[in-house]
Amino acid sequence: MKAPVIAIITPGSFVVPCATSSSVELVVEQVARRVTTEVCPVIFGKQSPDMPGSEMVDGVQYIRVPARSPVGYISQVSQRLKGLRPSLLQVENRPRFVRYLRKRHPQAVICLVLHSTTYISSPHISRVELQSCLRAADYIMVNSRFMKEQLIHLAPSIRRKIRVNYLGVDTQQFTSRWSAEGSARRQQSVDQLGLGGKKVILYVGRLLRMKGVHHLLEAMPEVVKRVPNAVLFVVGSAFYSSHRTTPYARGLKRRAARLRASIRFIPYVPHTGIADWFRLADVLVVPSGKNEAFGLVNVEAMASGVPVVATHVGGMKEIIDHERTGLSIKPAHLKSELAPSIVKLLTHPEWSRVLGEASVRRVHEQFTWERTAERWLKFYREQINVKMK
Image 1 (tube, helix red, strand yellow):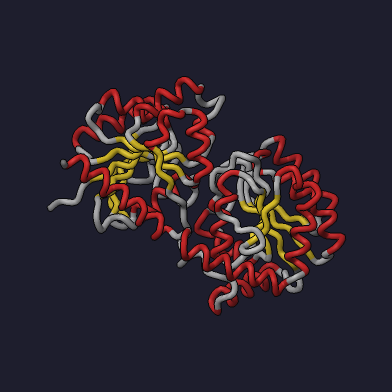
Image 2 (cartoon, helix red, strand yellow):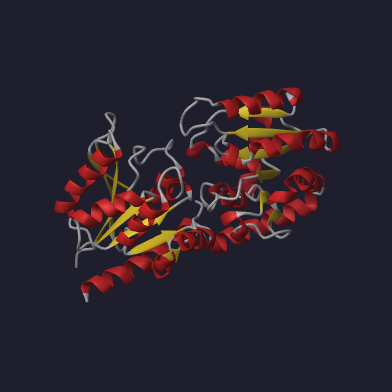
């Protein structure tokens, strides 16, 4: 019996697969290649002059179409779907695409997968239009209970459609700094960067106000005063796969100038090269605002054996187990507690290692791509069986 086809429609913002895409495309690539034993995933993405219009990679078919505008892109996808006849359409992070496809494929089973609150909020979409788009979906998959509650608040009638599926990490790529292999690779990075005797604080992510990087920079004078050998690496840019800047990003660098020896900015690093930075860290800091739906960097650091200091908001409350795998700080207490929390981990290395090793165990239990794929396959089976009855 031929395996059912699952059409996965990415936003069309990036070429897939690609090491410099956003986290949406990364999630799709990682999970799709782990479900090929039971289904045939077909991923739609943006056309590129450097890549063929269609190809197979790791058992997954990629189809690339022109994406000069969102409407033009989804129109091209819709045309290709007619010949594909998939068992399920999976739309990634674009509610309007669901409504568009529902009108043109009224009999299709359509699942909307939401990765963040961005495209369910103003100014991207009004509440009335969002509710219309959500009603057009048969099912909605989110990456945290926080996201589920956000959706229910915005559209109470769709409560029964929502499924939660936590994201994961590639444990072959993100190996613990406490393992023999991880320790050796970490020491190599320490030697290359001249960091012998340093305590490494890490931030990884885009330089956006909502990510709270300014809170971390405000905490650094106190951290350096109490831990003089501390050094902060801010890894990321204002935009994905770009060195373009913004007033906020420039302001961060001006603020960091007075601690130039202790704060270093590292421009955008593709995902294929980020694991070495996590292993290098003694602590990862994630001072995000209230709308952080999940935060892949949390589980990537945890898989690397690195304790996380994170804001107690959004989906991060479901990832960080306070004083067991890291430290969680309420937003109102960031100003008073962020620096002491970082210092506590840097000055208690034995405790920090206990938290780091507990983090690795938690990741293997809950937050691997294999676990994510298993939950997706369970969902696929349910929907395909319903359709076949």
